[in-house]
Length: 396
Image 1 (spheres, rainbow, N blue to C red):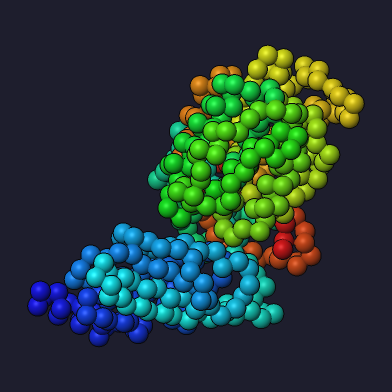
Image 2 (spheres, one colour):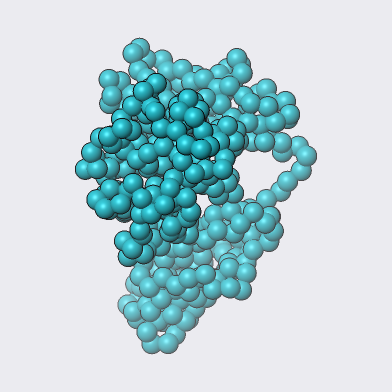
């Protein structure tokens, strides 16, 4: 007991943040630090010591309770939005005896001036050799060329970079029965295997939005709610891909869309041209899981005969071709499968692919501040490998 008291006192004297100590409990905010700059998604981390069992730690932001954690680690992820302003973070630790302690920090707005006009560009790069991912490359193995100009790498990471994903699941009438259940099972497997800081939103669509979740971590996805999703109506694939991109455009960091569909878009108001343009600006990586069946098996080539009152067969072929090109331009991939039993495996393979990407960061040396498209190429100093990465970006 004396050793515990001495340790508590030592930690209090070393802390750079004012920490509160009560007879039975001590708490300190480890992240964010007092006076730091924060915006968007932020992790609040509390350190707690207590002689008696801890009942829970309450987290508050700007006077509002945002959550309660009842067991270590005492950590909470919050989204501050895009308002660049002062924030006050507070934690309150309570013991089962009724004793409590609290700590607070105040963060500052991110400093912005006209001189901070060059944004760090991040590229998410998959490198494969005969189908297997290459995982042992170093920064000096990569060359990034932006509009014909070689760039200097500023950051180099591998794998463990949080992502924000939209799982866009076709639930039109053609997906009824085992197809939809396999889609739910596959998307659930993806969610359950995410990392703690990842965020996901599920959208089940037909010619209307059938069911959706908010952006959340794995624990915030209501699997029971997904189970009651019904398959009905036509397919407005392009319209809801547009919606998913607009939602991700408002999020910070690494953006991903996984689209699962078994057919051809038959009910969208928008064409792929509008989606392709938005995808360039959003910089979301798009993966398309295309479940082929029956007459849809020829969707990749000139044998597609589907037509409607809105488009001819030739127009549908062109729209699908543009969708596939948009997926490739984003740095994603098209995964064509023939059996519903493959769906879960493809979801997990995409997640592994995202975890095993290289993340290259650089400040473009040739910005023109005119909203133009920048063509980007990534070269790897190793023979025979395949490099998959977004083909460029639009200046913001």
